[in-house]
Length: 414
Image (cartoon, rainbow, N blue to C red):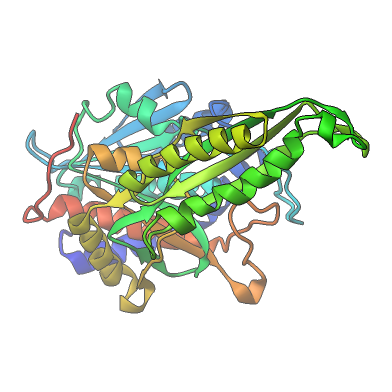
């Protein structure tokens, strides 16, 4: 059955047979969202599902606390055969859900608003589909169920630090992310820098409080904070080359308690997003300078803490081309599309620093059904047919990668 036409047909059939099960899996995970490093129930669900499959799968538990790594070794594998790594993330977000679904979150203040429930269900579907052709696999599939994608420092780097790429070192690593701006049925690919580096900004402005009627007797941190918000926007507009993407957002300002009291202190929080590491370094320098000297000029003490987050996510060209072509073969030319880079961040970037691979956008949007709300929205939703698309395509990609011995790849770096 090693002919690609027969494999595609088999994978499509097995995916269709598994689809309703994947929908229920996704909804089960959705009902029970767990935050970063709390994914005990979700991790156990993953282990139980893999254990029930009719295949020989090696399972590693408690990787980076709540993560799971599993290996499906093909019957045609040899010691020199390739290894392909596939990743899904497990955690949810600390936010309420406002959808009307009967399977909405049952845990107040927690929601799968980024599609990780779908990522996990889809990868479990891939494990089931590939288990049905274990006899036809010419290598090993490494399944990575990663904790804590949503919270810096993330779960990808701890998993790498624990050596998951040293045991059965992969030749390539692939992953996907639900994107409502891409219609369901389509998958978006982009070679190069596709997602931004993300850094957290914490600014404290300390002044001298007093009566609102006598600002001349104070050192007003409110005025300084407002000036900082405006000045920080010049980092992108006056320091980055035209066309170079970058974002500085101050998302929270806290200070003051009454209409006639100037406070002693104001705190601000925000984010920096960049697509180039040299510009990221420049932005860090300008952040420090603007905060310090603006505060000094206005007679207050201003300090900034920059918590370095995930690096730029850079897709390997050869692996992206390979995945794109596989999608054309499995889904049709019209459903493999050029993606747009986005300023969101992903710690899958660490996997791509360690190993060639690609990260694609799985279309989950359906405007006709009102499924258009962006990720991290309280109304975020997916067209669940994306589970069929993501599972079927990723299964075919894995088989194709292991089957095609002519594909060149650079080994992962430890």
